[in-house]
Length: 232
Image (cartoon, rainbow, N blue to C red; front, side, top):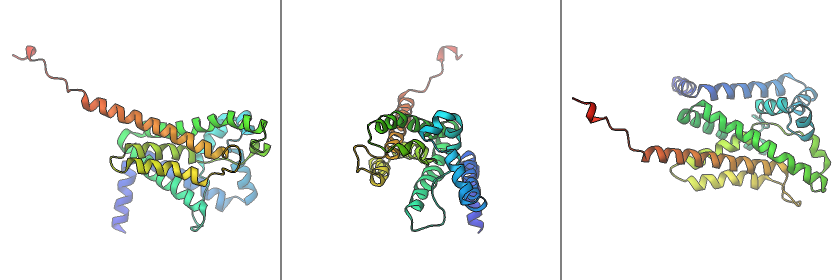
């Protein structure tokens, strides 16, 4: 128990912002699953879903509110929903986001997370408009339940994979394989959430490439030498 407490204390002290965010996600999840009724919880998550109808009526509320919940389970261990929780909340936020916070600071780490969430969500909007107009998606996707941290988690997963020194490309392939393997490819287009996750991965890879280039430039820049003319 002492060792566990020591490990948790070290994690909290080294990743304070990520720890607070994980705590908030757990609280909202417990609120929906243990306090609210099923109907009340459904109204809450539908109210923060980033579907077309909500984005047109209250874009700021749903874009921000969607990041306060995760779409998964903590108890159904044999379900695909639990696997999704392990990937998004477990590896994505608790591991990768925390690692980016330690390495680059909370501002950059959460900047990547929020950028992935916002950009991937907004970039799927014109796709859904076109797809519903041509009958490639059913019109029901305009008001579908679609919320959670998965786009942001996918972005930090992609960034973290690209920053690895070993098994970089294997990890990157795994990041892409997750949405590809779980997507619906039966229609003209894959389902819009698969497209969103792939866009989020691309954003994360771009952020990782930028951080790698910045590190290489810093390493190749010679340290400034003291001006010997000023030394007596």
